[in-house]
Length: 536
Image (cartoon, rainbow, N blue to C red):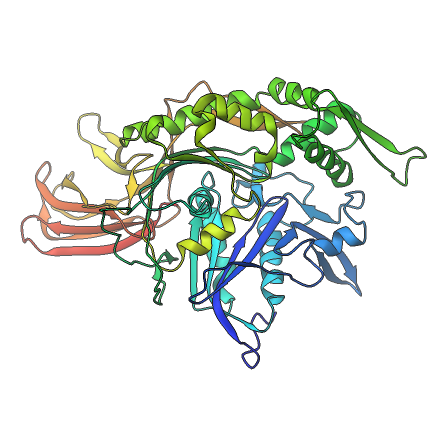
């Protein structure tokens, strides 16, 4: 696949942003030294400028696979799953354990996402020169999601690639000045993400040192004349639940015996969007209908907004939002930010247009603080604002631990290095002194693991319908050893049992990678320095 762009016709250089979504993928471009952001019209696959339906249709021509993308699928009325040729709602499963991914995918979710991103790249107008590419990632995501993005972009013909969290990008998309403290609520097609964000800078405060976002361990190159602003995430939480799940609930409520096909889900989505219009009386019944070849009569959908609100309440949505908010505020409080300190509450994502969701948040934070930027493109616009050169101090979603030998219990245990909520990059390294545990020990083995708190809530699927389940073991942790070889640190001098022999320093760099330096305490020599791996 040729992923280059014709260099002979480029006239405008700049940054491209791709916000991969569960139902809609947004594509935006900003020229160098330009303030305006352009939502790109990509021939055939856009339904509106900058909006590509996250749909792929797979067929076979002469035995070779052939694909249609985005609006091409819509235009040919192919968005029905009857032949299992439609690939949709794949974002939420990218990087997820294989046992959780539904079996009805024609392609693995990672492969589907890669196909869509590279098809978008191929269709970028030839007069645009993409110097930087910025991609967004959900904050409540498996670490492998980011590893997947890096792999996808490895053969794209672009020198600079950046990655930003969707909530942080949404905060910048709201356009507030430096020094603002925001609560960002992103209700997308497959996830609900909440993040309390501080935009650094502001009147009387020095702006952060210009430091470009890094991806895959490499610094982005380039300069920006725009004002540099930074973002520090004070607290965040998320749940793998979103607007597509609301559609599943609606379809199951109205037609419990019908299959969860894409065509029927799209009809439920259309009805949901119409019911989200605040001009509609909540007792007014709205209807949609869809014809299916296998049935003589059209399938009718009819619902009142008050019924939709009762359905969302019955399924536990508002309870989940309240729990996510409590978790986010608690983490923000630990970092010195109370709800009264917030400049505003930014709501983005398609689900943000549902009035009852807005009302739920207003009850918690107050109407005066509510900000609603353009819900679909806010993340892509914010991502572009982040790329000129800022340092983003984020917080870890999960902790990380080091395995050690406990002489008292005569067995291996895990010592936490950094906990969930730890800001990164770290200001100073974490120092640990290690003793020998064998006679004349010549090297020390270091094994790293994720130290993940169990979710307050989880989403399970019963007969294809998402169900919110409370997790009663939130105080326990899951130890997930990294899939890398043990790190062997050689000592300058043999160590004796119980004697201190090694000083180890751990830090987290600007790429959210765990970095190690170690010194032999006897010789004072540095015996290793190494980037171990990504914490994201």
